[in-house]
Image (tube, rainbow over all chains, first blue to last red; front, side, top):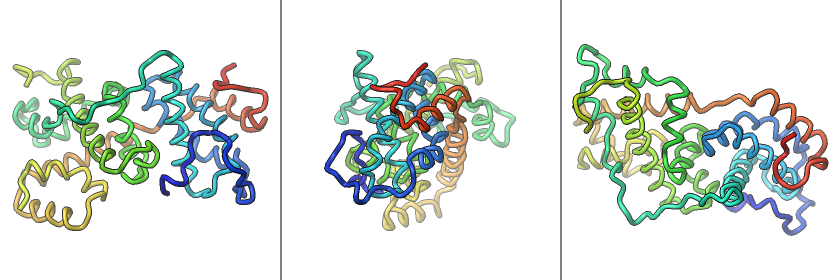
Length: 212
Length: 85
């Protein structure tokens, strides 16, 4: 997949119906519904909003489908439409579209969950300290942690880690240069690590003397 | 040889197979000599796996029914954005 094949605006473009996809949209869309819903849930951090976004995405995609030239790219194409739809949803609901300055440094950039666990040692009798920490987290806990990550950094993390897109594909879906994607991905990972530690401390999953 | 800070910075990209050959080889050379980073790599692998496995969500049945209607109807009955009942 390349950014060039992702026309996620949902707007009618030049007539390319000569190369229209052979398969009907409904069948193609159904193959990606669970993945698309999962993406929307993580992106919006809200299941009701995610339901709206999935439906809005499908409506936009349905209109734009005849112009899709590469059926193999349909998953990324749907995710790109969802991403744009989510930005529109933020605007329509009077929320600022999340942005970030990449110039400033983030205090979480240097945080290491691995090192923090080794230092804080919340399970002194464990042979598997780090894995025991991860075992504390249920799905809903991870959902909470993801929800607190800045959406600009969250989106690359969701696309690559959860949905298996390559960094290049994720950059295409989010319509950013690869370098920007990699930088945001790194910050997303660090915010995930920091978020998991803070969540565990704040919810009493681990007991430590002083917060680092 | 790269240091631990740089190795950690490359770690998730390495797990994603997103590193180019040169940086990946430098990373692997570091791992050969650094038990700590081997441990962190293993931890990162588990962390990524956990994040990935909790990210799947099955479509709720009521939404699936609405989407079926939308897909079968070609989207025509529902205009302009959300398609809630």
